[in-house]
Length: 140
Image (cartoon, rainbow, N blue to C red; front, side, top):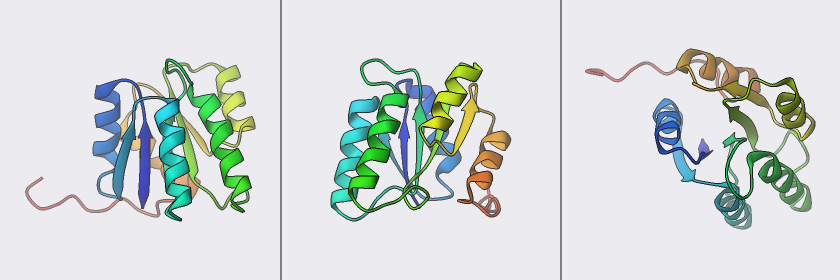
């Protein structure tokens, strides 16, 4: 699975990557501009991301704006809704307005920070990306 983690906070970005390492290769972006660029390159190379974890509150281009652009790029490249990346929004805000905005922009999930691994994995299962959690490596 190809994964893009978009998060301006270094520790949160590394934590998400650590949670996701058993499932695939993680790329990182620190803001919406980097995310849109990475998504554009991936689509052009016909190697789109399967999962994008997108922080809502970032300086410059926020996650909501990046999500709208992502869905536009997918539509322009014959990737109808449901065939492109699964997007899980992350935010410290548990505000219904933010959640509804994300869902209206076609997010597939929403996780409130601090992100707890078990609930995060459950959210990924709900998107249909994960069927079960891989076994921990021996010695871990």
